[in-house]
Amino acid sequence: MLALTLALALASPSGDGGDFEPAKPPPPTPWAVAGARPFVECREAQRQAEVRRHGPSSGARGGTGSQPLLWSRRAGRCPHAPLVLAEAATEEIVLLGPLLRGVEGWGGEDPTKVEEVAQEHGRRLRRALAWLTRAQRESTLRGERPPRENLYWRAYALTGLGELDTARKLVHEAAAKGDIEHWRAVRLAALVEVMAGNLDEAVELSAFALQATEGAGPSNDRAISRYIRAFVLVRAGASEFAMEELRDLRRGAGYRDSREAVESVLPIHERLFLRAIDHTANGEDSNAYRLWHAYLARKEPQDPERVLAKRFLVELAPPGPIVSP
Image (cartoon, rainbow, N blue to C red; front, side):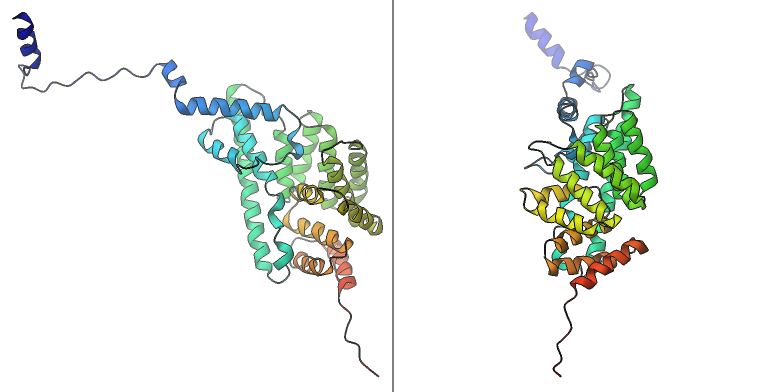
């Protein structure tokens, strides 16, 4: 009888008109928040990024294999994770290496296509720079040092955007602070100086980088240094030596990956120059002809570089018709 009375009392409406509302659940505890999926996912992404950052140098590493832009997606989900942001920026920059693979086929005939690629190149580099800047800011808020190689990759991206003065300052700072291996900083500095027209300094720096990668083992660091050296020597007037070096590089395995690793740091017009001289050296006249035209159609090359490009182009020009006497 008592049980029935209690049940009826609980089921009956309250005396104030039946506006009963259930109590709100308590807020989640810190432990519950820590177990939430985004927190766990970002913490694991941070851990993986730290392994990559503190493993072998990422200065020439490739992307993420079968999962392109994996770190970009993670950066979108973890916008306050410094190492994730830094990895996303690195991935974005490295994946720009093959950007001009199709240009041999249409570059000379349709310069507007090259301009479309140049616009995409600029957008992606600026996005990478934004991630690197945010990674540094988030590290400061945490009271931590910025991610390893942050300075180096900022200099790398700025070189690709043609902002050479700022890139030079950052690459020198990266070397002074041990943000990257010294020889990698020197190699990047060689490209900055050759594009700035400081040829003597570029020759010296590229020679140091080449010597530093002697016996680099199975990695392509040696081939990358040789491509940079050849690029510098062509600009410095030692074209014959550079052309022989480019021919020799073609005989090695993985030459395309090494060349595209160099391209990943270059502005679009300099990528066209490197590809054009490589095809010229290896007797691929049709591709070289189109690439030199694409290079000269750009507004960025300075007068000395234009004179050099025109000289190579004249040498490639087909002979005129033979007129019988």
